[in-house]
Amino acid sequence: MHIKFTARRFRARLEIKEHATDQVNKLDKFFDGIVSADVILSFEGAEKNIKIAEINLHVHGTVLTAKEKSDDFRKSIDYAVEKLNMQLEKYKTKLRSKDKSKVRALKAKI
Image (cartoon, rainbow, N blue to C red; front, side, top):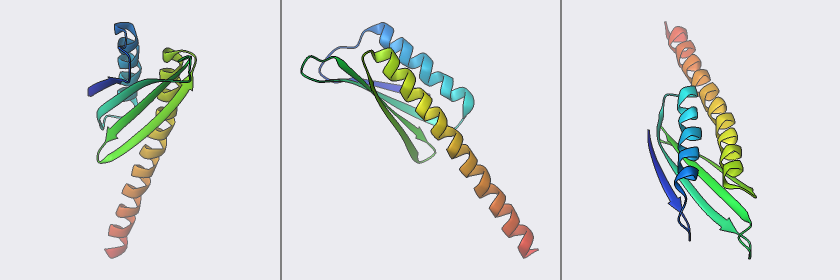
């Protein structure tokens, strides 16, 4: 899986990138169809005390997005990955139900 990093208006440290890479790669264990991921890190607030992590997963023509805010980039990344994990579970369920409905339609024709 290809992971693209974007840090808006600052230069992200290597350890933050490594943490994001580890967390996003964990999602690949749950679902094999992830093509690529975009990790966008930014600040919010006058004092830049709110850290935002946005992760976009490209999955077979679909884009799953999670955006989280906290006081630390690692927490924001972890929360966003948790959201994406739930979205992947829903997506897998949706794919399974579509496959079952196609099989039922074929059986009905026979």
